[in-house]
Image 1 (cartoon, rainbow, N blue to C red):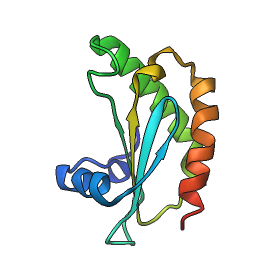
Image 2 (cartoon, rainbow, N blue to C red):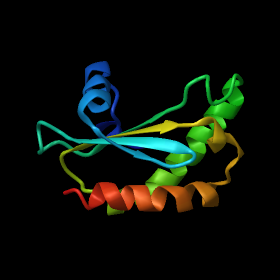
Image 3 (tube, helix red, strand yellow):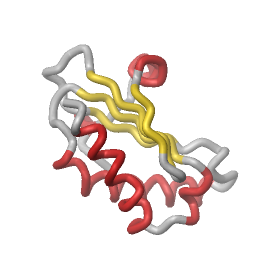
Image 4 (spheres, one colour):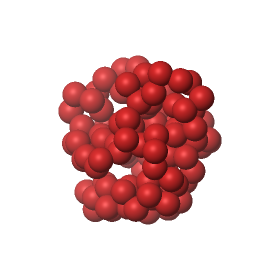
Length: 116
C-alpha cells in the first residue's frame, strides 16, 4: 500500500477522473489519468477491483495486491505532482503473474508519464 497522500480515496475525485480523464487500455486493466486541478498535490493512485473480476474476495484482493506491487515499481517513472491515476482491473488480470502485469503496465505508465 502507498502512503495516504499518494492514494486517491475521495468519491468526487474518482467521478472527475472517470468523466474527464484519458483512458488507456490493456488486456488486464484500464488506466484513467487526469491532471489534478491543484498541481501542487502529490500524484494520487487508486486500484479498483470489482466483483466482475472475481466473485471471490480472496482472488480480488490477491490481484489488487499484485497490482499495487507492480505499481510501486513504476511510481518513480510517474510525474510526482498533479496527476490522478485510477487503475481498473479486468477479469483477465486474475490469471496473470506479477511479471505479466508489469509488462502490460509498462507502456501504459510510460504513456501517462509522457503527458506531463
